[in-house]
Length: 199
View 1 (tube, rainbow, N blue to C red):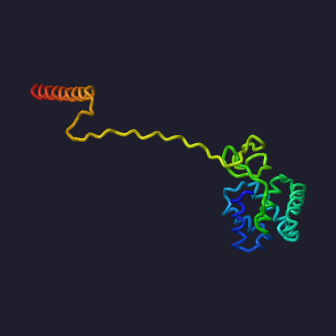
View 2: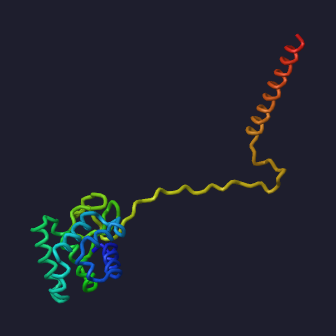
View 3: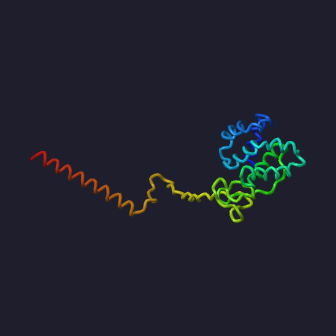
């Protein structure tokens, strides 16, 4: 069971009361604001279950018979609405958990690509589209690997500000050559300027 979706529906029921489950349009508007990361098929199936009065049918069945009622209503939604059977079962379990409190359900799995929690019956992840049947799931969350960050390289700091021992001789001679080259170019420019102004 998608615990994030469950918590969102519980929040809606806590704010508006249990009667909100008989108003699919209001629930739809609230889900649009609160459940942006919930897959559209799950939200759609949940709203179709509310439109088919499944909340009231589950209440009428009672807590003791809720598991049988979930299975029966899931088959009915699958047949009448053409929705995925596993998805119907999942949203009806979620609805029963909201109405009667959470119950022990089959262990969920996690998508091997994006790490999102999924019911084990789902054949593909609705978040990223990865196939989940058998090889596409793992029994615990996985997270995309972060690129390893390179280790910082310490820069040696001279103990004495006048100590130039860290600079190697090649670097020092290169700096001298550059300085001399600049001096020579400046002298040539001055001489040319002097000749041009006198002539």
